[in-house]
Image 1 (cartoon, rainbow, N blue to C red):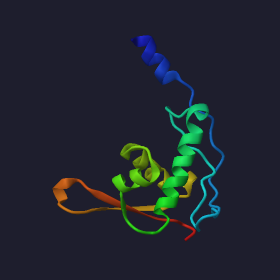
Image 2 (cartoon, rainbow, N blue to C red):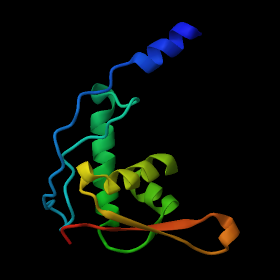
Image 3 (tube, one colour):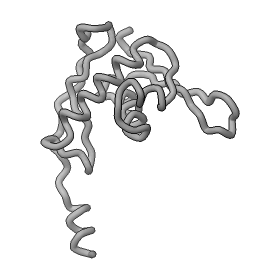
Image 4 (cartoon, rainbow, N blue to C red):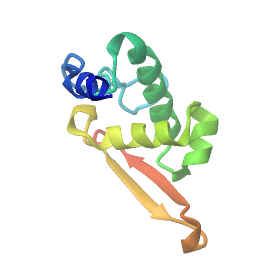
Length: 123
């Protein structure tokens, strides 16, 4: 068990990604993702295509400037609520553009339902 934990925490992180440039995509005026996620669990060979295409789908879905709940974004973009939530958090990071992601609780406050709206810096 100790060897497994040692290997897990001594693993080198994936190579750094260069930068984020907000470029218009062909289908809307929102930014186009040209960088990749990172972190301990990110493996560029295994994850880059899947996560960058998911980010593209999330950007497309939220580029209308409206509020969206996680379940509707999952239906539009695929993935899980956890992965869509992670892409929304990524959009707040400077390397992904430092966009504003506004969250608002809706319905019964005890329900825990939130909706999210992204305001892109270049909009």
